[in-house]
Image (cartoon, rainbow, N blue to C red; front, side):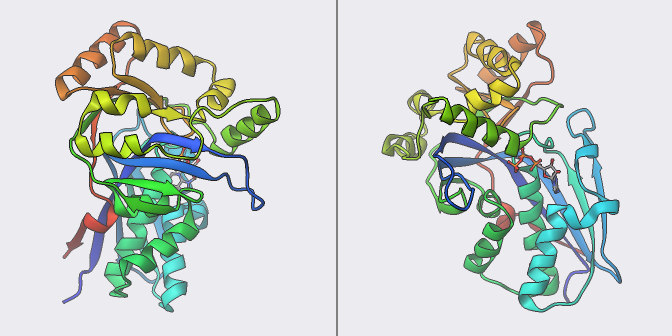
Amino acid sequence: MSARAVRVHAPAKINLRLGVGPAREDGFHPLGTVYLALDWRDAVTVRAADHWSLEVTTDVPERVDLAGVPAADDLADNLAVRAARLLAAHVGVDQPLAIHIDKAIPVAGGLAGGSADAAAALVAADRLWGTGLGRAELLELAGRLGSDVPFALLGGAALGEGRGEVVTPLPVGATWWWVVLPDPDGLSTPAVYAAYDRLLGEGYFSPAGTAVPAGLAAALAAGDPAALAPYLVNDLTIPAASLRPELADRLAAGAAAGVLAPLLSGSGPTCLFLCGSAQHADAVVRVLADRGLDGALVCSGPTPGALDAVEELA
Ligand code: ATP
C-alpha cells in the first residue's frame, strides 16, 4: 500500500569555499564552490488533499523568523510549493497537496533553508505520487528551482559549478565541527550580489575566484581540519560586510576565540567557525558567550541530503 503521507528532511548547507565570478549574460554569477551539508534540518511533510495548502511552523522561534517565509496567504511563492507544483506539471499529475514545513534553519541566513525545503518537497511529492523519477531527473528539476537545490538533494559534500547547480559529490574523511553564529536579522542574497557587482566596478578583487584548488578536495578527503582551514574563503564576505559592518567584528571575535578558521556562510549573515573537535567547538561557544555573542551553536557535517532522508507515514 502506498503511504498516506511522506516526510523528508533536508539539511542547511555551508560553502567551504565560495568563489564568485562577474555576472554572466543571463544575470547569474558563475560560482566555484564546495558545499557541505550541516546537521541542521527542515522537515517537509506532504499529504494528498483536495486543494493546495501550506502550514509553516518552527520549534525555535528565537532563530527562525517565520515572518520572512511565504505561508498560507502567499503559498505560491514558497519554494516547497513551487517544487511540488513543478514536479506535478513535469509528470502530468493533478493531485493537490497539503504541505507542512517544520523550519529549523534560519531564514535568509545564507544557509539555503528555502532550497532545502524545495529539495525535500520534490522528493516527498515524488514518493507520495509514486512518480519514481530517477536521481538525474530530480537533480535537473532541482536546478530549475534554484542554484542550491540540487545540493540539498545530495547532501554530504560536493563541488558546485555553473551557478552552483552542477554538483559533483566529494569524498569526506571526517566529521567536521563548527560553531555557527546565526543572526536573527536576515540578509537578502540579491542585495549582497548587488554589493559584489558595485565593489567589482570599484576594483574589488575576489580573493577565492571560481577555480577550486585541488588541495581543498584532498584536505576534505584526508579529514584533517588544520589542512582544510587555509582553503576556507568566501568572496561575498566583503560585499556582505559592506551592508552589515558588524559582520567583520563577529568574524574577528571568532578568530580571536582560537578557531581554526572564521568563515561567512554563503551570502551571510550567519558566521561559521571551524573547530578541531566537538569539545573545541563547545569551548568556543563559551568564549563567544563571555564576549557577549550569544546564540552560537555547535553543528557538524556532512549529513545526508533529501534523497536519503525519506520517511513514509501511515
Ligand atoms: P538563498 O537561498 O537565496 O541564498 P538564504 O539561504 O539566505 O537565501 P533562505 O532562507 O533560503 O535564505 O530564504 C531566502 C528567501 O526565500 C526568503 O527571504 C523568503 O522570502 C523566500 N522563501 C521562499 N520559500 C521559502 C522557504 N520555504 N523557506 C524560507 N524562505 C523561503
